Image (tube, rainbow, N blue to C red; front, side, top):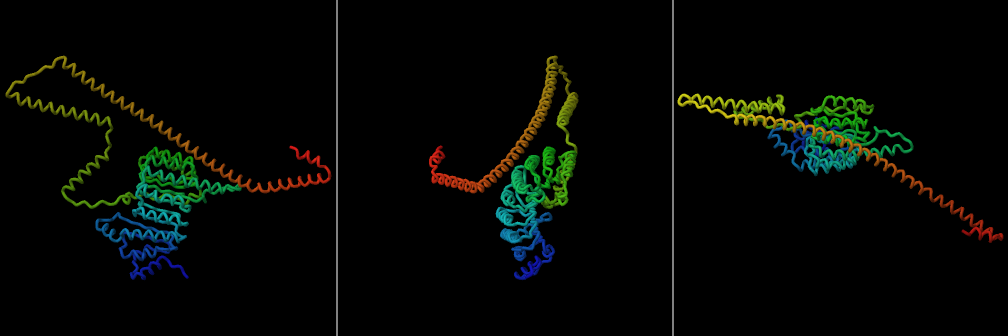
Length: 502
């Protein structure tokens, strides 16, 4: 019996339901690819699609995509009516049934579809029972570390996954602890796998090892703390090939930590730090040079991903109605933007500008007073009050005290800046010590594992040899006693008594 293609399955499902196949759905169907654009499908058109997905063992790639960039209010309401929560749950149930029964599925992409706990649990069961999936893309579908923690155990246990894409999943520096735990578990499994390969003097093949070889975290604000945590977790890794960290809020500190990681783990040949505008160009050039040196023949297939589209990361805003108030608001916003684009004054410039403004105000007040006196002089004589010498000395003392206070403030600022530099250096030194200690701990753990395995082998080997030794000892002991019996029969019983003495 011939195996039905995906298009034939969809046509048969439409005929069973009594619907005509839709042309825009057939355009996204091939023998190996199923691409579903959720915003185009009506409520009554979901049933044949679910029948087509369920228990389909021919699909190589499944792509579920939601594209809300061109939405308005009417489009959102229409989508909510067509894609109700029960339909969404049934879609993921049929997806899991397809993942369980197939051995041809290589890539699964779920793009911009918010996944709740029930959907994530279904996807995790599918990952555990699937043995062919290589790429898992969850671009914009997770809502922070809670969603990732549900999927993480199944990703750890999956030995066939090579690429995990977590672009724009609202991950922060705290979420990187989960990523680091995933990387450490992969490192331990690969170390044991390579140790098994080294038995009987075999050379291990690092390129053929199972596990994740590319991880994409672009569009997540992990910052320098997340970059440093990832660099520490990858110090003992010799298998990961690519890390994508576009638009992650990384500065020079995080880039330096990643550069140290590249120098210690020569397997990484792609480290994408584009759209991180606060990194020095010299550090970026050093990172590019080290990745080029790390590149081998196995890295030819691994290439840089295209740049993130900032328009796709944020949903479009509602159109603004044109009115006089809105026009004024727009003009004020444009003025604010032009002022923001200008160079910001420094702390000292702000201080001297404030002094100038105060002096101008005082001069203006004095001019106003003079004008008032001129007006009054027409009717009354001007009386001049002379200041005494004590008042003049007091004013001079106030001015000198003001300058002394300013100098003290500047000295305090300089001292604080110097203290901050010293504390930063001490913090970097402490981080370097922690990194070395963690590396030493991992080395000791590996050595401990190796010694335990050798001890188990020796104990098993001794258990195999012990019965043979016992048999030989028992046979020699019986022969000796038979010899003694012969001596007794021959009349040498006294000699036998001498032998029996201790």
